[in-house]
Length: 404
Image 1: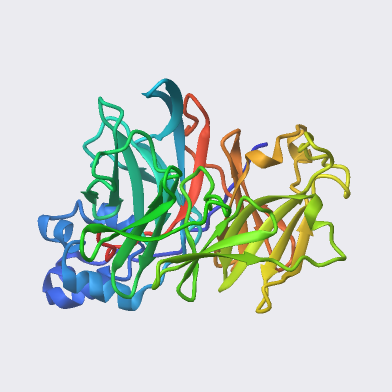
Image 2: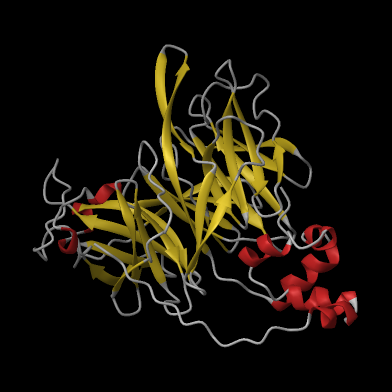
C-alpha cells in the first residue's frame, strides 16, 4: 500500500541575519521558545549559546508558558536478545538506538536517537510525561532500571529495588509522572512477595507500601513501552479478572479492585480485554469479541467476528459502550492476529479523541477517531525502520522540563 503525502510550503521571506544580531537576547529566546521541539534539534547546531538553551531554566520556563504540544509518535526497529536468567532463557526485544518521531502538527518525520545512553543494550519499558524508563542487563544478568529524557539527553540510574539486585525485570513495573511537581514515581512488584515498592524521584530512594492480597493476583501492564493510566490520584491497571480493574491509591499506597458492573445487553464476558487507556479525562476499557476458545483472528468481512469495543468507566463503576469497530485489514489483502496490536490513546489537531493501533508485524500504523468511527493511516516513515525482529511504536510527550 503506497502512501502519498503532500505538503504545502507557505511563502516565507528570509530575514537579514544582521537583524537577529540587533535583537536583545531575551527577545530572541522568547521567539525560539515558540519552536516545536524537533526544530530545537537544528537550533542547537547554530551556536554554543543556542545549544545550551535547552538546559536554561529561563528558556524552559518560557517555552512551557507559550507552547502546548500534542504527543508525538515514536517508531523504532527491534532486535531480540537472549538473556540467561537462572535455568531459563528469556528473549527481550531491545530498542534500536536510531528511531524516528512523527509530528502530527507538521505531518513530518524527524530523526530520533538514544545514543547518549552509555549502554550496549537497553529495553524500553515505560513512557510518561516526557520521560522514558528503561532496563539494562549486566554481565551477571542483573537488571538495573533507569529513567531518561531523550530531548535534554539526561538520564539517571535508579538504585536497586531489592537489597540484592534481582535477575530479570520485576513482575510489574509502572511509572507515574507528576508534571506540576516535576517529579515521578516508579512502582514495582515482585510476584514472590507481592510487596509494592515505590521509587520517588524527589527523595531518590525506594520505599515499601501495601501488599497485594494473594487472592487478587498481580495487576499488569502490557509488555510494551506504555503509559500508566492515572486519574484523580489513582493509577488504573488491567486485572487478571476481565470483570475487574486494579487500582492503586498513589497517596495512601493501597491497592484495591473495581468490580465492573457489566451491562446485561452486551456479551462482555465473551470478550477479550485488549487494553486500558485514558482519553480526554475518561478511563476507557478496550475489548474484542472472541469467536472461540482458540480463535482470535479477525474476519474483515464479518460484523460478528473480530469486532472491538470501547467502553468508558462511568461514575457508578459500570461500563458504557462508546463505539464498536473493525480494523480495516482488507486493503492489505491479509489477515493478522488482532491481539498482536498495541493500542494507545492519541490526539492530533484533526482527531482530538483517537486511538492509535501499532503492530510489530506491520509497518503501517492505524488511527481510529472515537468521535466519528473513522480510520486513518499515519503517514509512512521515509526511513527503513524494520529491525531484524520487527518494528514497534508508541506515543510520547516531548518535554524540556522533565527531569529524570
